[in-house]
Image (cartoon, rainbow, N blue to C red):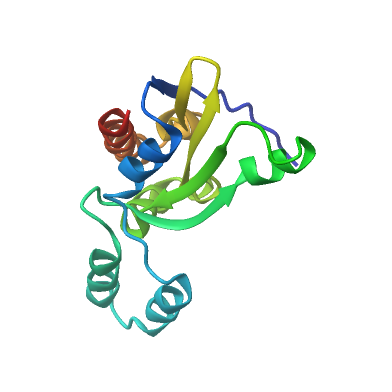
Length: 163
């Protein structure tokens, strides 16, 4: 049994836009495939070319697709009688990018797809993302880290444009 320490760097922005507008802007360029159909398509893919075609059809202009969303604010507001801040966790990614990281750093599969957190706080709407390169650093794969840095750049660009 072994334990390693993983230090995480978090990218965070604050927007003066409304929560709803930030969510619209973040999700506008992310693909929203039917995940049951997508999983069936993955299983039916016979070749990498088949898989690449499927993924390209599922992702949006940002190069990402939404795997799932968790409306944490809805849960938090139950305690406040329907009042309180909104908080949304989006799990997004691109299976082809994930594949490239996992090939040389299998533990990358623990971190991909990635989480984008959008939440209301005092001072505005926060957009946060844990940098994949920081999560993969302890595993020592230069190739996975290179791919992770490219991923981080794409996510940061998405968040900057939405903020």
